[in-house]
Image (cartoon, rainbow, N blue to C red; front, top):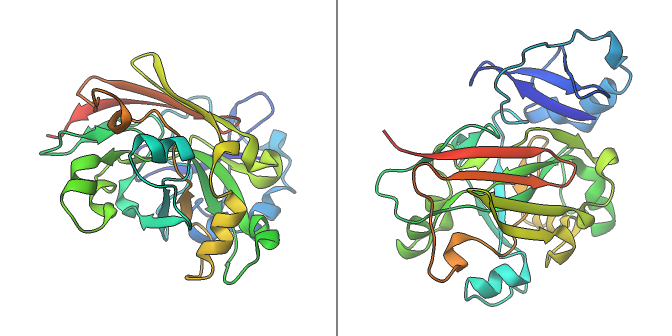
Length: 279
């Protein structure tokens, strides 16, 4: 199933794509928290999609999940990205958080925050948790996943690296978490380690890789995180970005107002954002 949320910001409604790519309206809870639990998703499988009303003009597509309990990220999870960042390949997953208020729609503008000189792009495979996960093995880990989505983990490098403290400062500005357009259920994706992901800036492809290049797989990440915390339905994990970010270029290249990013993870839908200056 390809699930989505459509409508103005803060007023999104849940929907589902039919076989012809049309949005159909769903009733029931929003896709947030337990609204994306495995039990909820199983209940949707019994619905005759063709019987649902077609949404002729869905308008804006919102983030595929509503307010998330936790927005986690994995750092330096592609070897070539670690190399371009001048950092050693990590021996264990690097875990940090992104403020849930950074969540935004896949085509919403990315707002360059006040004082920013080094806002950057990062296409990533997103993982949405579907059931509580605590001390799960790698063999069990993918059974805890509700689905997958495309994420742009937008990052302000000066705030992240040069100002000290934790990375969350450079990851959390409003609009720095475009997510969606779809939450694609895990059964439809299959193996998450075989997906192409790419990002273009103003029409030029700058990131082009495959999730088979991840240092830590989705199963390893979920299992590892569950050793230290209880993952909950609705939690989102951005699993790291491949090489090609602006910080790694020579000379470095960061977002300017008017820049357009287009990005996609194979089978999970495409995003497009224009960078704009903060008011």
